[in-house]
Image (cartoon, rainbow over all chains, first blue to last red; front, side, top):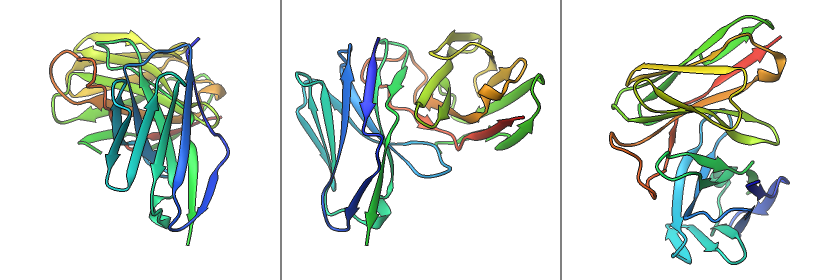
Length: 113
Length: 118
């Protein structure tokens, strides 16, 4: 069955460093992948979408890579700030024309000042 | 929250009672989704709707039913609540009024409903 794995252990880094989060998937060939941010007690918020023919995508301090050979996406936050502390979810699209997404369980990032 | 509201925001109920959660949106989006989120499982799709009176099952639909009698409201009903349905429930929409096209699956989420079944 389709499976998405994100590192369940929290990632703790120092302010100013680059945070790198990993999303791996199996038994799946998604056309694209998305990353969401979720703060405690709130719903996820969309950050970035990357298509299978795009190796890399950037938005301000965020960078996402998508390696369809390794079946992996990396999510980078450069010059991290305490305000970046949150849980980050990756999501792959399900069947086409339904808008359905399959989510990973998320990785919690803690940026320490 | 993209004009999405959920009610109630918190609910405590007893095993065996029916529970209905409401998702309301104000922008006539065609697609709406109900998820539950549990530690270690992430977000899992319960049901979704692709139009008025058009719904389909998701990954974890057992014990849940949905209805969509008008565009703006998507109701999730737990017919007879069980303790395993204690969770945080999120509603989401996919922007737009037309049929979904591949590449447009970005979703916007409501604030969530925290449900405790005793």
